[in-house]
Amino acid sequence: MAKQAPVVGSKNVTGEKYRGSAAKVYFTRKLDAAHLIKLYKLIDENIFGKVAIKLHTGEKHGPNILPREWVKEFQAQIPNSAIVECNTLYAGDRYTTEGHRETLKVNGWTFCPVDIMDEDDKVVNLPVHGGFHLKEVAMGAHLTDYDSLIVLTHFKGHAMGGFGGSMKNIGIGNASGHVGKAQVHGVDPNNVPDWTQWPDKEYFMELMCDSAKATCDYFGKHIVFINVMRRISVSCDCEGVAAAEPTMKDIGIAVSTDLLAVDQACADMIYAAHDSHDMKERIETRHGLRQLTAMAEAKLGNPQYELIEVE
Image (cartoon, rainbow, N blue to C red; front, side):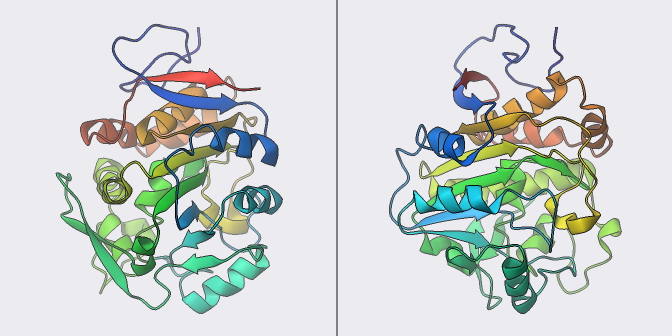
């Protein structure tokens, strides 16, 4: 019997029963633009107005980022939409707005508007209601220009988080580069140490959860989550050409209106895969499963889900 991620949650990937209510997670093994669009249309009921598509656009020439043509076809289906990003806390290709714009061109994100939400270093402070550690988070100021948010995520490993799913995409990604991301990483924005000295493990997962909660509370029901489990490296797309080559097979696409359910389902599918040793080691050595239990405690969704496979 397939093993489930050893955390709270549904065991439906293993075929076992759960008790109580369950969120709907739609899933396909087909990895292409047509199925990305097909699954999105199952969850888009509350997406309206000016739409932000939160995408990790990656460092220059990253080998594992989502295919540009898929995203181009997807974005073309969504009127009045733009890709949104923020600058980084680490000194890489996207640390400054100028460098970030150049990196967007190099990586081919030129087919639609890309809003660097903190491009002028302005922020909007969103409250964290009942957070673990934070009372508010400095987000890129343009975030509140949007009515709805689509979280389009490459689900993969992460050097500090263990894995990077939808929660990581908004928890880190919407925070402003030089203030909010310092808050989320638990460091002083005026004296940022080398990233290897940043706090990690449970504390970091809880900070990230606080930030994700601020975004989810702001958008309410006008937010959806898409995890693309393709080229599942142990490395994040922030590592660019230094990212490790994937050592496990692609899995598919999972979507939901429930943040916890979609990340839980993807973690469960990682644990159920026979070739996921490297990913499981990355998750567990970083204490990444705390992301899931933290979300459950923060009421950021239902850890029990019904996985609905779509052809």
